[in-house]
Length: 461
Ligand code: ATP
Image (cartoon, rainbow, N blue to C red; front, side):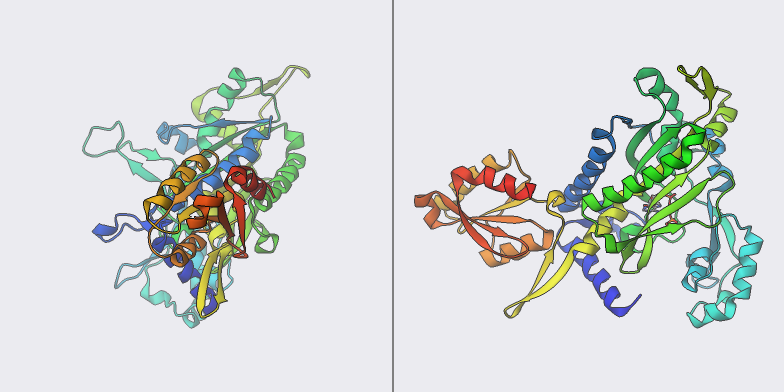
């Protein structure tokens, strides 16, 4: 990572802790690797990101419905999906200190691709062949064990009351399996016809070998996934439409196009028709933000075989049975959250001071409006509190009467609040307040009676 970017990344991470976006899990116990907690401001931003996705994916799409399936499923699901046998990453362990790394990530640093189709022997050969180049980056393969595949599914003993736990159940490694299992239920209980989609937001768990880069790669994370069921011959047309739809949705969230790029998967797993990732330009480089894949009929074939149930679709008009093909879109809430933060962080010189502003797109700002009485005295705090009550019917507001007004503005800038409203001594007589805009710092006097409409218009534009 270039120095400037290391700097930016550190600043973003520090800000998230300082301002209540993200806390490391179990901090008073020294932390718990790969898990993070979303604080009071973070949970608001995450909810806004999820609501935007849901609105685009479900509310505005008559052909897509929502679902919330259980985190636990029959262990057979994970056998059928191939996760029990094949959901693994190549692990290497430092012989001295036990530090674990992913062999494919180490190779990626020097531009060598080790994809999921490779056997462990092939990966170890690649490591040997590139040992000199790796040493130049400071990675000495002699200090590490040979690579071996490590399964990422997280086991639990749910429903198993024996000591051995020979029949583990798993915490789901991805949310989409719950969608496949309910594909028939949804058809039978709604008026959906193919092509149609099911969308779900929920937690997923992976025993990531090296959870790193803050919330980019965690062991517990949230996914937003949509699986779209199509006629086999329409798979690629629908796939192109989904790619375009998702790209536009990210732009409408406020991601800048110059920070996005497509990455085509060259070595596809045998069942896949085509696979692209949308990558975001994080401070540590362009990395996967979202996967959009054409999966053929693999998933339904597997579940049909393992469950013994017919999962074919009957097209009443054409009087035809077929197994639908699936195209999917899958994105992590944490990765999108991090993308928004990295893109929004700015510093600017104001007089002798450095102002940090989080230019979060206004429509997803965690706090929309801050209400700041100029003093704590009753004559200001009482009417300002009433203003909070009134405005919070329409907006996510924060009331703050601590410290100087300058410090309060800075705090709101750092959490990305688009508008601050100051109630001062003149407000008592003229029933007007000062509205300060985050990005320009311009201030305007607005009549309290017109405030709701004024702010609604601001958010609309
Ligand atoms: P990577 O190659 O980065 O490990 P992946 O290809 O395994 O990701 P998918 O299985 O396609 O990821 O998951 C879909 C989406 O879920 C990813 O694009 C990403 O946004 C998110 N995601 C996957 N793994 C993690 C994780 N460990 N932490 C946070 N988000 C994740």
